[in-house]
Image (tube, rainbow, N blue to C red; front, side, top):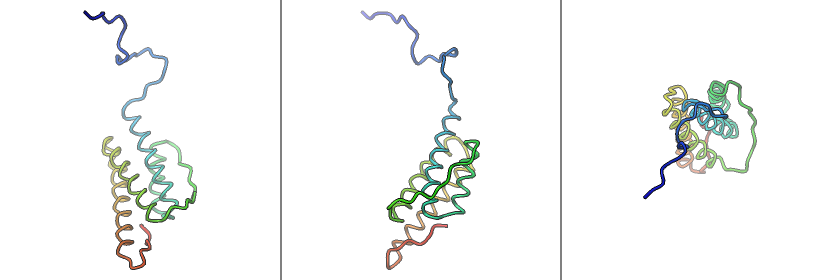
Length: 134
């Protein structure tokens, strides 16, 4: 009724393949470094130097080289930047937890808390202006 399979499955690992393979840990390192680098860009835009330095240390540890840093300014409102940073820190936290990287997970959770506090302070302030998130 069915034709028999004549070739090996594409899902079978090929040890003699002509392309390099990365382990799950290497893939998670790359993903975590990417999320942290994006968080670093938003953190730098917000002018949070100390927090940016801590994030840059983790990116350098994961990539083996220090990240490029610049304060590329967008027209985004500070509240939008804090929301974006909170989301990026959340993604980094998920990947850090997945790879059991305690240092990056703690840093990500701290950044989430800081951005949550900055947004809460903006909601509580009578003028609606954001105060810095340390």
